[in-house]
Each structure stands twice: as C-alpha cells, then as structure tokens.
Length: 204
Image 1 (cartoon, rainbow, N blue to C red):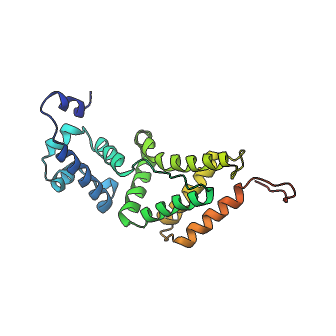
Image 2: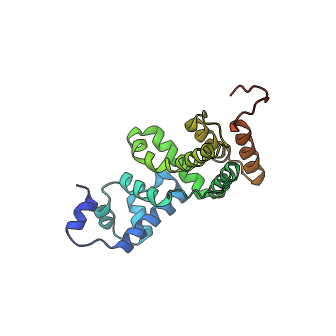
C-alpha cells in the first residue's frame, strides 16, 4: 500500500497542499532541472513540511511522476476535417510548448534520467505516450478519410512527426516557427498521400 493510500485511512489529505506541492515540483523541475530537484526544496517552495510531502509520496521519484501527470495532460485532438490541418495544429501546439525554456529543460532532464534508469522509464512511459497517442489518432482519421495511405507504418510516422520538433528544439536548441510547421506538415502529406494511377513510383 502506498503512503498516499495509507493517508486516506487516517486524517484526510489537504487537497490544497497536494496542489501546492505538485506546482512547486514543476516549478523547481523547470528552474533547476530533474536531477537537482529535492524533497527539501519542494517542501520549502510549496510552504509545507517535509513530512507532509512524504505522507503523499514515499520518494522523489513518486513525487516527480505525480507532477509529470499534472504537466502532461491528455492531448485534445479536434477533428478539423483534413489531415494536413490537423498535423499543422498539432505541430503548432508542440512549437508553442517547446518555446518555453522551462519546458525544454524539463523534457531534456526527464529523457536523460530515463536513459540512466530503466525502471523510471517504464513508470513515465504512459505519460510520455500521450504525445504520440494524439498523433496516432490524427493519422488514423486521415486513413479513414482516404487522405493517408492505409499501408503507412503508423508508429514510425508518429515518431517522425513528434521527433522533428523535439530534435529541433531540445537537441539543436533552435526555434520552430510557422514556416517550420508548414514545411513539416506539407512534407508529411506529400509522403503519405494515396497513390493515384499514373503517378510516378515512390520508394516509400
């Protein structure tokens, strides 16, 4: 039984304190990076005692995963009626998110930590998967409308689209703008549009 579950059997948890702790964790994560976040620092910034934190989460890892769930919300993928429009909207959303230095620092630190810790990677994967899950839905709608070839590798295409902006911002530290959005969206559409009789053969 987790400490959070045990707490429910005793004095009720203060939801306000829980929110303050998670908000403080995200702020620290963005300010100093994943490795430098400590329970002491979280307690100090959130204005609660260290035992108050530990009554909810038994370790820094549990706390960071709870904060991650608050940070990576399930993606809303509106049906815009066209594959290119939906890809572009998705990329604009990611571009806006990656423009924030704190977000870039959080993402880079989390990926680095997951590389060193396979157990952590397994625990955070459900949250990280919310990004590709949104793109998978867009691709599947494109296939259903006949805008995307039904034989495309959905997982590989998802990784290509998500990875393009991640690499550009997290690895290269270069900005992404509307021109980048339009270029990537147009390139993807050109690659996955169904073949028409008479078109020249493609290698993909």
